[in-house]
Length: 140
Image (cartoon, rainbow, N blue to C red; front, top):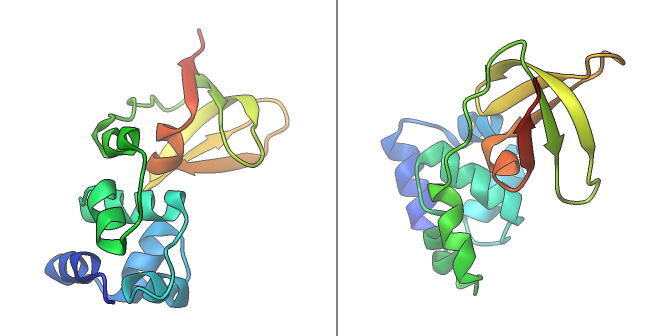
């Protein structure tokens, strides 16, 4: 079962499978498996694909035949806050690691928002899809 909705939109946008994979930070082969219906893909991966292609997350999951929670239909409609370079934000990322850090926003690179720890200096990035599920507060 090919997920024609992903493949069709990708081609309309003039993107190759490799270009889309690079844009969302996935391997070309894994994205190909998702596009051809061989793998379902994680929620975060499907959200990244949906955001990159301007598709609805729930529509992709329905095309895959996956039952989803009705609240997930709201996810693509949530606006990501506008980050100001140099400003510090308290981010509580949900998921496997559950990090809670005060981070300084540096810039946006493609779909990735790049942050730096103000003291330790390490950098991290979050996609829009990851930030939708995180708690973000601006610090003064």
